[in-house]
Image 1 (cartoon, rainbow, N blue to C red):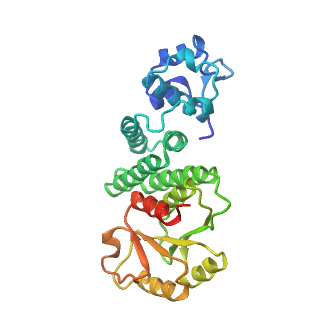
Image 2 (cartoon, rainbow, N blue to C red):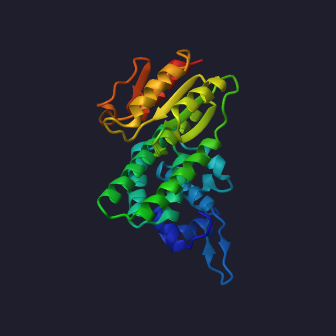
Image 3 (tube, rainbow, N blue to C red):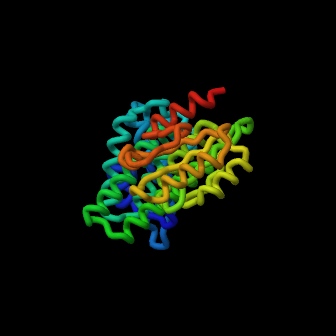
Length: 295
């Protein structure tokens, strides 16, 4: 989000009432908003993130006097590694659903940005995955137009790409390649997989959506990738995915494993080459990464 918001909108986004927000500013010096020409308080995305961290810490029992003078990064260090994950999950899901229902792209982006800044990677991806599914559900129900669906999805893509780029890879690990094949243009799930891999210290080569199988095999080999991860969301009997999988199996050395992120319904009509591992959810993907590349 690029434009600032007023205190009423801030209250809606954070769930903290206006009088409390003013007290946190004037009495406890926990936030310093900018001001409009007319003197009204204006808040940035960074302010929203800071206030939501403060809200969580207060709920966990911290006194406001303990938080005064701390930077946002220092506040985050006070968060327990597993702090009220269930309540954070529920709270964020409800707020994200509301933003989606209202097609409020700015609010959606701010909330999702906070999720990735303040949550453990596994939880962040769970909340992100729910939001993406909810966008698709609302579109299928006709409650969200094509334009709204595209704008929300684009915002989710931007937030997740930025979160992934902010993670520092481990220099000693060979990279992992990510792509979708042929006609598959849905990459939001693939991006989440890349984020999880990056959170575990892996370097990445992100080819994105719609890669031709022959070109992908050559490029992955040239990059000396330790693993190729492909995502499949849609496929039909007799479609190109079956042929692409066969070609990829033949064209890429067996020294490079191939994992397919897909649901059962997507691959039930396919003959998946025996060397390829089907990964059905993010939890399994993360477990496999840890087991395969544990140093």
